Length: 348
Image (tube, rainbow, N blue to C red; front, side, top):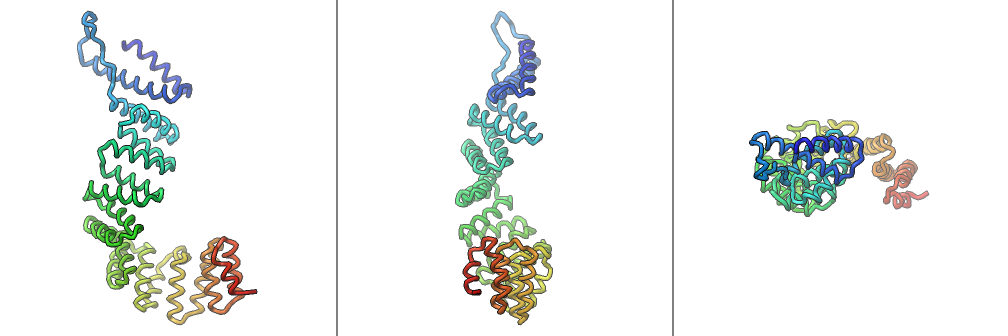
């Protein structure tokens, strides 16, 4: 039996390397290879079967064993970066072994590598239906749902992941993001507090709690939370922005500007940051400096329509119609919907 199988496998191996067999044949070859290996192990550990008894070596393998053989081959393709061929093999495999969770997850992960998030979600969902419904697969399904703007489904999967593995702070953190997006603010706060209880050094959770407190006009609480975020991640511009917004709302624009001084040049060119800097300068009576910082940011990023429009608005309010018209025209050319109405206000 063994002598007949070896030549067949060599022929199939040469065909596979030459790309002359279709996917179905490739799957069959993998399964046959697993069967031969299993036969070798079985025969090597047992006495020779009696011809008179009619006994034959066991060559049939289970779906789980076939799945393992397929996954080994697919992993080699993945390591070589051939995700397309890996996906093609796995697509054929799931048609043959539809109830094997490992194949479904492998196909989903391959789709992720191919930027096919919708297809990946369907395979993760199939894997969960087969079971078990483990936390990592729920989380992966939630992330694919989020990428496809299915926030309701993402919420369900992230919640399930959290319930399946309550000690992992990643799951409630992502759950909180979905809860905020769906305006479930109180639920989001509960999730974020769970994160910091599990992982006190999680700056994102502290910063998000600060942002929620600021939105609720709880300025002292916002400053308390963002101070923790800045302590953990002093270079992150988002935390400086939250702190500066809170200080500005407290009527402390000078302190807010000191916080914003630590922003990188790139961060200072972002619309929300430059607008805040300009507003704080205006509160201090530095109108000229307020306009200048917005104009400088727009000049540094001439392809940004929103910055061009912002510069036009500040220039128009400062009485410089000619310069305002120039920036408004640029914003309009770059596709700003609001620039045309501003140009009408400015006039010729």
